Length: 192
Image (cartoon, rainbow, N blue to C red; front, side, top):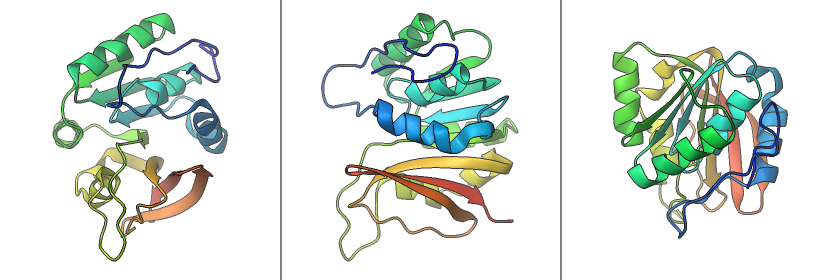
């Protein structure tokens, strides 16, 4: 696994052993960032369910002004910090926070923060045939705080498995869907 583009392109990213982390594959990240294009440059980015920090580090490498990465596991946050050092992207414009993603959302909202890009590739949920999804991806779409953290004209990039049919409701509207194997990435914006 490596950073695909920008100033840190080619930097190898360390991944915690085991099945606790499912990193966003290189080809998928390349497709995401090719689709985002200009939205990354000078953006303030937020990554939820950080894992390795690949999405937020990719943002910084490609010209984002700053990034916040939220990861619940302290062990994984250590890997994120190591990856930031290896990519020479650590510093005042990169903030790694160890906490539950939904707690982090509320705290950032209380601080009055807002972001141009919010990226999340949470753990996949169960298959949801004939019932509403209970996955982290659906919980993010249902979260009342999340829309207030996305600036006007910003983008939410949300990963989920194709066996997890998400229910999209206001204020979210789809811009584009990217497919790769069992993974889908929805690029969303707030409805005008």
